[in-house]
Picture 1 (cartoon, one colour):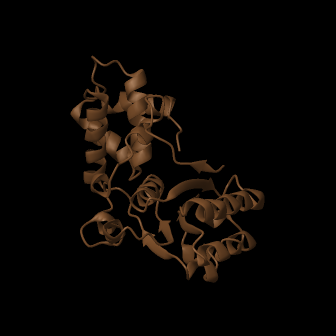
Picture 2: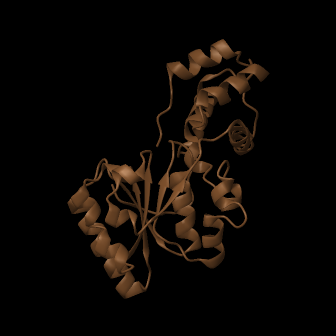
Length: 240
């Protein structure tokens, strides 16, 4: 449930995890947030991170952006899934964050995935800790926060909208994956376009399909679109 930030990812981690950007400059498809003068760039320049809600489709970089914010703000990164966590988990995190702040003068960035899954009472439990600065809360949601988060919590957070990755961004991600792997994927030209299309704006899903191609395809026989579709449907990697 809760997961503190650790060192570099290993080759055993999913490709999407290994390719996480180290800076906002490496983030694709979200220039309206990470470009010069935009909200996250300003936080990076000042080192002052505020509580946020990232609202957007799956695979658009919500977790990545939260991790980068923790890095630029020298914050302790703790990750929590609202699907698998409850009040007991929150109490432990709040207690540890308070000790961390008092003894080590280190503030905790708590990233809550699927934050809309918490009920109103659970959402209210964040308020005093956000208010007194014990935690900086960054929530991720695919649902409209105006309807899913209570007003008191929402008033203390800035909502930033993430866009579905466009074709250009997905192509950049595909090239980056090939550079990381050290070789081109065995894909016919039309199959590269098909892979982009099947990703449907989801960068994580694109990289999961890349892993499937690398693991199962013949490296010396470029896949045509029909064969590619059969391959990724036969075994779609599931990593989050």
